[in-house]
Length: 455
Image (tube, rainbow, N blue to C red; front, side, top):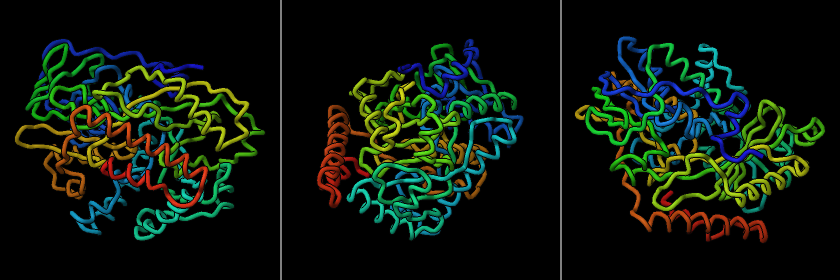
C-alpha cells in the first residue's frame, strides 16, 4: 500500500514536472497566490474576459498540490454552511438564485472541460446520501423536509429499495438524492485547467513560497510581485501566511482507495450510475466509484493539529487507515477481500461560521476566495467567476450573492482552537457509536458538538 505521496489521483500519471519558479521581482496586473482550483479558475476567467491583462499565479509547490489534487472528486452543488443564515440577511429569492447558480456551475465545469479537451473522468450521476441507523434515518427525513422548501436543490427522498437500486450499501434504510453532482478525477481536472490557463498566456510560478501579502504586494522567497490586484487562493494553507494564522482553520481529511474490484463484487454493489455517495453519520464518510472500478472513500482522520500545523506530504496514520477500511467493509461487505492500494490526507479550510467567502477591497487591491469546508470543487468555479467580475468592476448578478464581501470573525487562539475541534469530533464519534448501538433519535452529545462548532 502507498501512503501519502500527495494522493492516489496522481499515481497513474505521476507527479507533474515542476514549472519554473519566480526569478526575482516582477510586476503584473493581477497576482494570484495559490494554483489550486480557486486560483486557476480566477486566472482562466480573467484572461478569457480581458486577454490584455497580465496575470501571474504563484504556487509554493505545484498546481493542484493542495486540496484540489487530493479531494474526493465530488463536483457538487453544496451551498457551504447552509441557506437559512443567508435568508435572514439577503432574503429567500436571492438564496434560491444562489443555489441555482451552484447547480449550473456543475454544468459549467463540464462544459469547460469539453471545450478545453480536459479528460477528468467526469460522470454526472448525482449525489446520494444514505442513512444506515434509525437516528440517521430520522436526520435524513428532517433534511428532506427542509430541502422540500428549496425546489431549486432538486432533492428526492428515496426508500431502502430505491437506494439499493442505485448503490447497495449494507443496512441502508433510506436516502436523499439530487442530480446536480458529477464524479471527477480531481488531479486530472486541475492539471488540465493549469494547462488551459497557460495557453491563455497566464504565467504559473511554481516552487515559490509566498510568505506575506500586503496591499499591491505578494512577498515570496524568490522576490516580490507587485500588482494592482493581489488575490489569495490558499484555502487550507492560509494559516502559513503572516497575520493569517487564525483566519481559517486547516481541517484534516483522509482517504483510502481499494485495488480495482472484480466484476462479481460490482454485481453485488451495483453503482452503475457512478453517483457520489455519503452517509448520514456525524463523522461522515464520502465515496466514489472510480473510472477504473475502485472505491475511493474518505472521512476525518486526525481532524486538526495544534497550532494549525499542516502535514504537507499526506502521510496518513495507521489508525485512520484502519478506521476508514472498517467503514468501507461495513458499507460494502463484499470488499473485505480487497486490498487498500493507497491512503492519503490533505487539509481544507474552515471559516469560523462554516461559510465560504469571496472578497475584494478596491482600495487596497486585496481579495480572496475560499473557506469551502470540503465542498469546493464546484464552488471554486463560481468563486473564480465572481472574483473576475469584482476585479473588472462589473456589477453583475454574481457580485450580489450572499458570500461576497461578508465579514467573518477569526478563530479563537490556542489552546481553545485545538480543544474545541478535538472535543467536537470526539463527541461526534461518541454519538455515532451510541446511535449504532441503541438506535433511536440523534444523540444529545451530537447536538452539543454542533453548538461548540458554531455550525
